[in-house]
Length: 76
Image 1 (cartoon, one colour):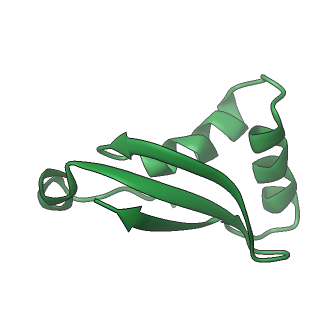
Image 2 (cartoon, helix red, strand yellow; image 1 turned 45 degrees about the vertical axis):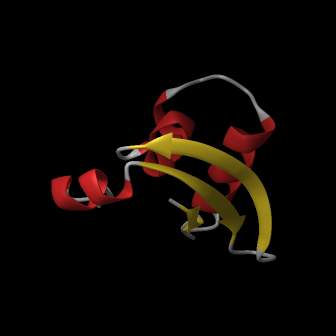
């Protein structure tokens, strides 16, 4: 199931700072800024983009363990 913000939520959030957390150890592994559905785009990148980066490799390992990346909006 693909996650996304509703149009109303996107309009209210505008720009935001978010964190991605590894559910296996509850540690933050990425801090980003974005708007729209940027916070969710990393999951798709890990699935469809063959690039090798530390962030994408962590997301792929989380998915292999049948878990979901935790994400939180820190500031908007």
